Length: 75
Image (cartoon, rainbow, N blue to C red; front, side, top):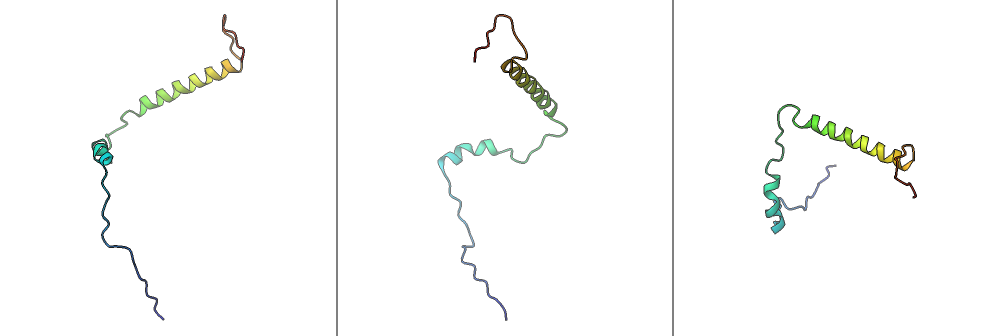
């Protein structure tokens, strides 16, 4: 016995437009475009490494592993 599927969804969907969408549309105009080569990946890697060093320094200061002259740790 065959089964009949009834689809009640409309065939055409109307997109809702908003004022903020019209303002933000130019910011999304380059969606999907990729720069050839590595681009800014090395710069991002350097910045991530520097941030990791910064976090390690903060952790060592908090842990009192590094003591600085004239800086009292009283937390």
